[in-house]
Length: 169
Image (cartoon, rainbow, N blue to C red; front, side, top):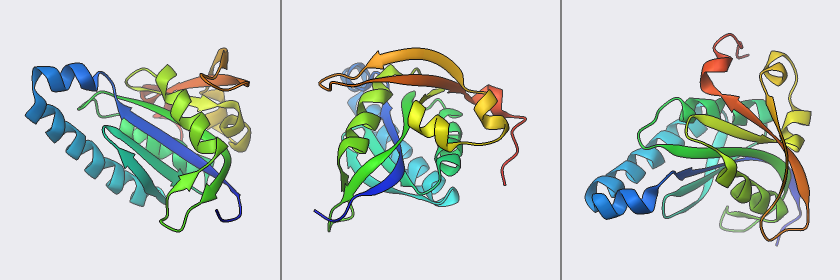
């Protein structure tokens, strides 16, 4: 593996995909395809990239926590399909394929399980990387113990509707 680096990860997955696929497999597959296209467009608009997809999940990387948050909010603004989104800033190891591995990716993937459609879950690490009025929009949700990990981290929620007054650079 290459040298580690600090990056901000946006983890996205379709909420209720299994039930959606059971009810209408063709429609569920089309919804995941639409999500992938939206993620690619939004990643590009906010200076990020998709580094991994798996089933109904997409992982994106951003050099800026601010860019990652705004990408996540743009994704959360559209409810077709309903998605869960988490943003975490952490250490990763780049692979020759462009994929990322490491603790930061694991934390981001576990955090998105705590998200509700339309609301972005933000880790304490990402909150600390943010400045300006966006920080005041983060709602503390306490600390959680991450599944299959020893650590507990503070999380925040950010709803898309609460950020309309926050200006982008």
